[in-house]
Length: 71
Image 1 (cartoon, rainbow, N blue to C red):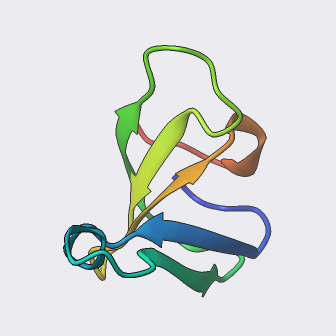
Image 2: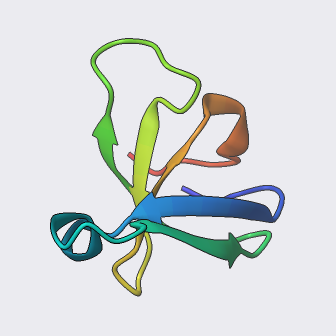
């Protein structure tokens, strides 16, 4: 998939969560970033897709945030 606009996103660092720390990691994803959808949530949510980037970070995106998806 490709993102049509840049986004500020977050993901949960499971190791930090296990230690009781603030586990929310914030980062920017540039316009045109490429990733692959690794999960489609079973039930509709505002962020139904989980995307994996090439540096190993995962984050959720909404359907309208995906510009192109390869099958």
